[in-house]
Length: 598
Image 1 (cartoon, rainbow, N blue to C red):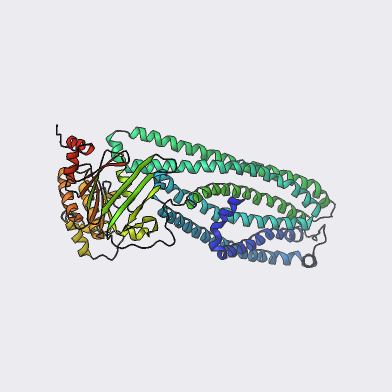
Image 2: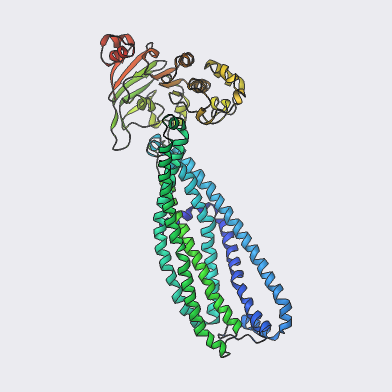
């Protein structure tokens, strides 16, 4: 029940529109249900030319209407009844159109809102969340799972109300005509609900599996399309086809199991309908032959009872759709209920430009509660205006340490101070506005060069963008592009070389003009010519700034004010290049290895 409430919670912002749709559903169902009442005068008065005979004493207005119909000649009814029926059908379809349009509007609003809530939540989560979740899985939550919710709102909830109103209408008609026969029939009909309920529970489990399978397919698609160059280089097309086939086949099998169970509802409903029809014919057929019940009234009673079967069957399908939606609902709320590990305090304050230093005060860090400790007792002071280099073997925590400066993560022990203020007490947006990051893995959007350089700023004049590109040694190759600064560079900048992507990334940092700069192995993956241009651009960018640079190529940081040597998550040595060489140790070994000094 709690799952249904959480599912309906998405409707709360649109309750007025939903209420109007429910009212339209009620009148549409009411008119559809009472359409069958036209069978009585059509059969008894027009075709058989007999009086309408009811077994029960109905309310006075209905009895007066029956007396009126009995007093009108069959010829008069023949010419007037069709037009009355046409009028009722037209009114019914006005309400049908109204509730269909309104419910689809509600569904699309819910779809829009849930997608937006998911996207906002994903944007607000901390970086450690994305290290645990596959990108394809998150995409599946925003696309496939939300589409399942839409289906539940636009079709399932519509049918839930419409078919319930229809059942109620047909029950009133049947009870009015023959109370005893109707009650006996209604004792049989609920047995249809038992297999529907059993199948529904199984469908929810299958739906969970289906949606996980869709996430697997999305992940493989994303990986293989992004990594198509690697796949072709290693000739693994057949391997990837087989991997995709397996995931696709799993989804097919789960889908067919769901379809088999849903199709099982049809014969069950029909069998119960036939049983009810046989009982009614045996019971009331004799009364028709004895003249105690007119044939038209009998036909309407039988039609009302059998008509209940169809909405019950539809409610079974509603249950199947809702069970699938509940499975999607669980997955959506798993994201919405996720709390970021890096949270901003309500009273967090803004910070201005760095005045004195960034201090690591005995900082420890690990990924997750049960993860291995990545940083251990980091004690460090980065003074304003210093160029601090970080070196060490792969996997020693260099990138993790510098990621604590813009507060992408929080330390598990100790604190990082910005001009003496704990970063936990600082507004993250103000902090990050002071920091520019240029990393080895440059990310560019599938947009124009102008968009990528001026990312996040729509009001930047073209002259400033070009000036930033010149300082990054990028203006030359940008001008030679087909549309210059308006050239779309493709997904992740696929149309650019590694050096060109890096220089656009540097231009972006130059335009931001941050007082603090983080360089994460910005030149390690470049060829010699590209490295020359990028290094010149970085040298210009670093002037007058506080810089923390991670480097594998020691030649790029030999002039640093301070070099940190890291190993096993600790700072094992610190000093200038000359001091570290003189002391020996790990730095000297790294230096001798890179420069082949024996």
